[in-house]
Structure formats: C-alpha cells, structure tokens
Length: 88
Image 1 (tube, helix red, strand yellow):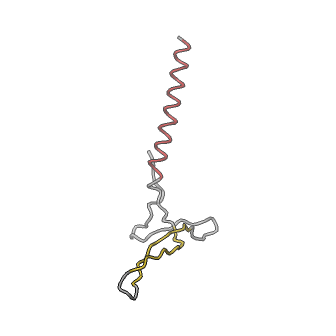
Image 2 (cartoon, rainbow, N blue to C red; image 1 turned 180 degrees about the horizontal axis):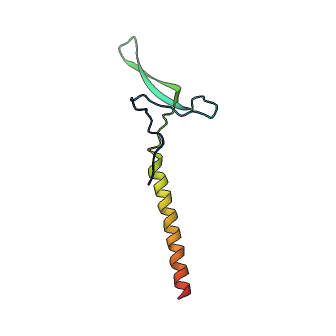
Image 3 (cartoon, rainbow, N blue to C red; image 1 turned 90 degrees about the horizontal axis):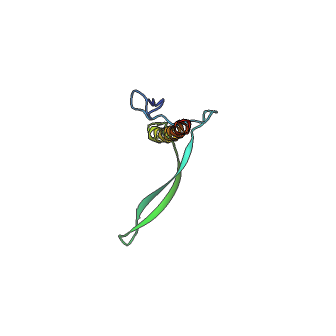
C-alpha cells in the first residue's frame, strides 16, 4: 500500500512547498496570459513568464508508482510461468 508523506498542505490548510537540500524553494516556470485594456476599448493579451514554487504533494506520484509496480509484477509472473513450463 502506498502512503504519501506529503499532501501539499499542513493540518491548517497552509500550502507547503518543495525545498532543495539547502532549504531554498524549488521553482518551476509558469506562463500566464493577461488581458490589458487598450485605449480603443479592445484588449491586448500579454504572456507573462514567472517562476512559482512547487507544492510538496506526492499524491499525483502514487498512481504512476503503482502502475510501474504492476508492470514489474507482470514481468515477474511471466518469467515464473516460463520456468514452470520448462521444468515439466
């Protein structure tokens, strides 16, 4: 059974972020689109690139780890069946 050590927030709901071994926040690039009003009444869309901290949430990793484990178990079962057939 998989147990997540981190779910992205503490017991009060405050977001917890991933940190490097030196304690600094781990950041990822983010692109956001903003609509800026123009003088003629239209809007101009501008992309803004920022760096945002990554939430410390392991819940998304559990299904992938389980899928990999299933594939590994399937390979082992397949090898075991071959060995059993060869012995008979």
